[in-house]
Image (tube, rainbow, N blue to C red):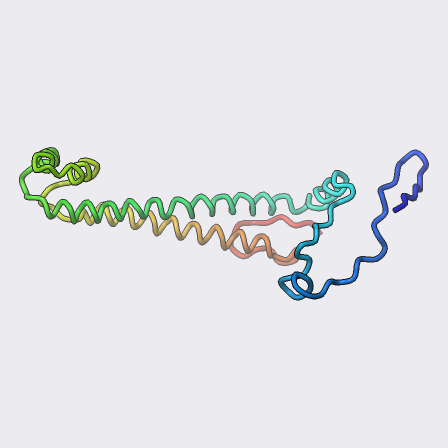
Length: 186
């Protein structure tokens, strides 16, 4: 490959090949899923100037880009928190089922001590790690609060994902519908 300099003081970037290699056929080549498998990805010959040019070109879309990144981050956080909080609802149900099986009128500590005295150490450890009210069942008020919180998280996550998709795919002439104002320059 040769480099052609237009300005003698400024070195020119290396030239790209004029022709691409012929498409491969057979296993691993061609087709919608096999094209380019096994071949190294083409690397940028001068990444720095290309990256700066890309950032300059994206300057009018800076707000949208920041919004997409922020909404994507929020969506991921809410996706992680949802199952964790839903696990608390499962714990409330399990604690209620175990509490109902214990005799009413005793404390959790007495139930743990009775299990240890009977030689059932594993069950005693299980009881000591739980939040129990012996004789009572599931605390439906606490369960309702946790489930409402999980529902709220999933709705927020869905809104975040929808706004992110809308803001990243909206055309420059049509602003996004209900994800807040967008500034566009023509």
